[in-house]
Length: 331
Ligand code: KG4
Ligand code: ZN
Image 1 (cartoon, protein in one colour):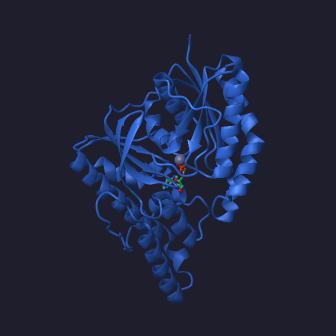
Image 2 (image 1 turned 180 degrees about the horizontal axis):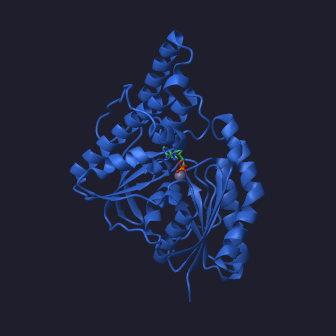
Image 3 (image 1 turned 120 degrees about the horizontal axis):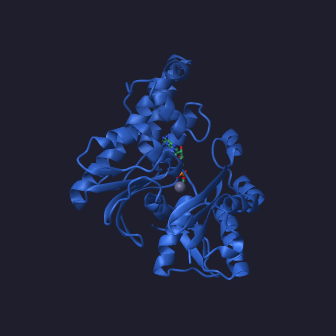
């Protein structure tokens, strides 16, 4: 009998559902909440309301695209955390209700682990072998992770303040760009030159810090605009190239050090910032095997939740109705 896993993702501002049949992706539906663009960031209350409005339709669409009837599901996997608590609650409650109504197992998935396990989707892109070095770079997280296997992850280093995606989004906001600014900075950076230098705070070991970079951009822009109020407009592409170069340099240096320290030869990227073209190009220069997720699997999606759920299902690792959503939880 086929193993059919429904994955549900509602950790932030994307309502998503996916279906995996015997390890193969059959449907992957994402409804993006574009309304946050106007606010310069995700408004938690708006995000949870939008999840409530959309989740039934998103799940039903994923099942019909996969040509699967609810009653044939083997298990339901959902993002337990980390994320916005109100958003998580919607997916958690929906998954628990389905599990109860259909009498099928419930699988709680860690969002950041799933960003790395997305590479195991059998979808014509290469799959790493365990153990490997993971770099998770998203709007809320930046971590270097020793991935022993699909169920065991050790954090080697992480950000002490802002995440890499946050650094893109917050500096983008200073430039007057809409949220999320990461993809826009990436696009504009290609048209400019990294001619401005911003602080690249050095923190010991494999931890990261991006708040100094953010402050450095803020002070630089303030003083430049005092002299020329059109400075940002005139230099937008070069500013984007310079900000991207600074963030990428910090990430790449730490990856290099981690490769040296662990002796691991495979580096696997996950999370929204892994879509960044500057980061992708910079990492390709190293003597290591690089695994980059295809672009649709970089930002939040439910395919990664269904895949992580499938791997946990094979191990028999189940949650129950008392498992609580976790806004903050270590990988
Ligand atoms: O993984 P993700 O979709 O959501 C979280 O789990 O946080 O990551 C979203 C983050 C945002 O900060 C967004 O600006 C950033 O990923 N991002 C990018 C790019 N695409 C998305 N940052 C830089 N370059 C990109 N191409
Ligand atoms: Zn994410």
